[in-house]
Length: 141
Image 1 (cartoon, helix red, strand yellow):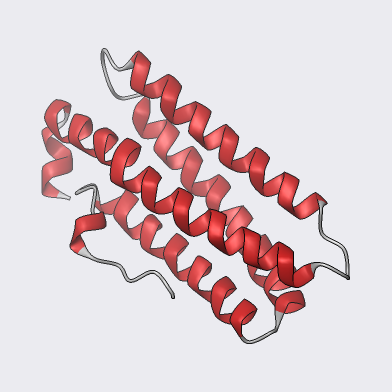
Image 2 (tube, helix red, strand yellow; image 1 turned 45 degrees about the horizontal axis):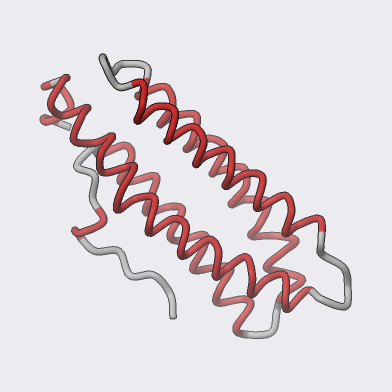
């Protein structure tokens, strides 16, 4: 079942929320192709797009984190989660071979959906709240 974007996923930082919506769209594309049995297309076309966009998005969030004062613990947790995500994606991609593309696609979809929703609901929402509290300019965006 694809991810449905709801207001409950908002961090209330417009740039982050728009990027999260794009990530959800890419994960949904990956899942749709997987469920249609088009695993090679999912892994060869959508996954590289997702990987590139994730790197861009993480860089954007990490640039915003620099703006926060007294937030070292959250910063370290956030950075560690980003690194763990990239490492896990690489591990799953390395396990890929022509005989297990369906398994690879299924494992990726499961991991991506669970990780992203958990990350948004916790770490990214904390980031959004702290940005809004320390920088009133974000409230207008």
